[in-house]
Structures are given as structure tokens and as C-alpha cells.
Amino acid sequence: MGQSLLLERAESTVVINRDNLVRAKAEALMDAKGQAIMQAVARYLAYNSMVSLDPLLQNHFFENPDDYIESIRVINERNTEDLSEFTINIETRIFQSRIISAFRDLGLPTLDERIPFRDFYLIYNAERKFRQNEYLTKILEQLDTRLKPYRIRTKNIIVKKIFFHWKRECRLGLIC
Image (cartoon, rainbow, N blue to C red; front, side, top):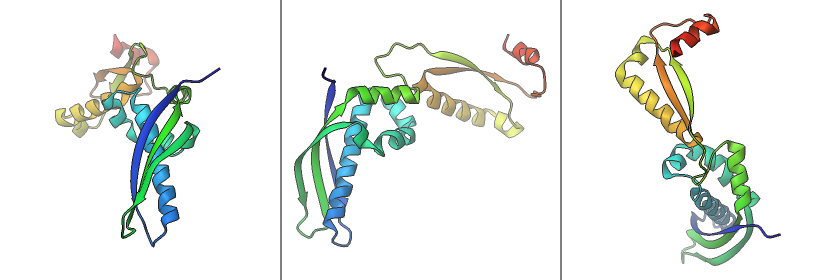
């Protein structure tokens, strides 16, 4: 039984430090593999989601690209005449199922999945200065941006004072 494979090309250029060409080749190959994986990941996420989740995606996919790659073919490798830079161009075959499985592990739906947004109530009780409109708007916009890839939408309840030792029924009264 065959697996679906994604074909991605990537190029990486690194600086050769202390005339160590072997290390430069290894770094360039690792960087190119990471770029190829991130290109494959970009097929399944919206651009805004890629931007807001960049640290998470870099950590999960870019750090261990070999977990997702079936094979690599070096198309071209070269260095400058003065041995200051090394460039590698590769073509990779990437396991589609492993990328989608990683999305499941991260709780991220892909672009083509028709998962509805989940609504959550956010009871916002902040210090006085963070209740000002300029701060509040920025905080809530950032929250929406961070939660959108997970298909989570917040309904915000802004209160001037709330005590969390109140009983659950009292807090639920704010929602109704």
C-alpha cells in the first residue's frame, strides 16, 4: 500500500566559518530540509495561521525534518570561489500522512477540513489601565489572532470587578 508523498524543493545558503566546508554542508542541508517541510506545512494552513503559529511550527517541524521526509535528492551544490558561502538545492519527498498526523497532535485543523468554530466565553477582569479601550482592543485582537488557527472564537464579557470565589452559578449569570 503506497503513501501519498509531497514533492518540495528548497535551497539554502550558509556562511562557511573557519574554512569548515563539511559543517557548512551539514547546516545547509538541515536548513533546506526544514524549509521543504515548512513549504509542505504551508499547503495545509492559511497564511495568517502560519504567521501567528510560526514559533510553534518552527519548533515542531523545522527542528526534526527527517521525521517527515521519505527521500532527498541533491539537485545542486556549490560554493563561492573565495569559500565564504555554500549553497545547496534539494528536492524532497515528504510523507503527507505524517504532516497531517502532526496537525492532529497539535490540535490544528487543516485548510480543507470543515470543522466549525468553537465558541468560548472570556470573562475579562483586568486592572484599570488594561480596561482602557486602546489596551483592551489590542489584547482581544491578539487573542483572536492566536486562537483562529485552532478554530476558536471568543465571546468577551468585560467586567469591572469580579471575585473568583463567587459560586459558579453567579459567574454563569454574567453569560446569560
